Image (cartoon, rainbow, N blue to C red; front, side, top):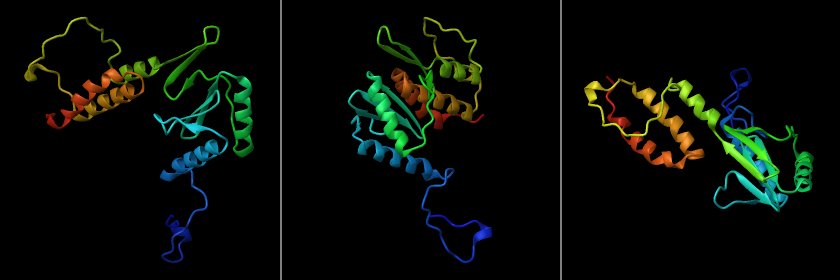
Length: 193
C-alpha cells in the first residue's frame, strides 16, 4: 500500500500496488520471496543452517543475494538445465564464470577441484579508507597506553571501523567477532572530547 503522489491525490485514498516498485523498501524482500518460491517449486531445498541464501537440487547450488544469483555445481548439464528453467520465468543476464561475488574474490582450479574465496580486496579497501595501509604487523603485544597519551578518535570513526571489522568477521574471519564485540560494548563509554 502507498499514499499517492500529490499530483494524483483526489482524496484521502491509499493505493494497493499490484507489483513492488523497485526503490521501495519491500521491493527486494518481495523479489526474494518470489524467486525463493520459484526455486522451491522446481525442486530446490533450503539449507537448514543458512536458510536465507543457499539452495540445493542434486549437484546444483544456488546462492541468492537480493537480485543476484550464483549457480555452482559439479555437472554442467544440471547447471544449464537450471538456467533454462529460470530463463523460462525470469529475465536472466549471464556473466559466465564469475571472478567476484559480493565482496569475495573467486578463483577456481578445476584440475584440483578447488574453489577459493578471499576478501583481500575488501580488507585492503578497509585499510585504505581508514588510512591504515602503511601500518605494519608486530609479533608482540604492547602495554596499554594511558588515556592521556592515547591518540584521539571521534566516536563516529570508531563505530565505522568496528562496523567494517564486524562485516569482515561475519563473512570470513569469525575469530574477529569476539574482540569486535567487546570493543563495541565500550562505545557508550567513549568520551566525545
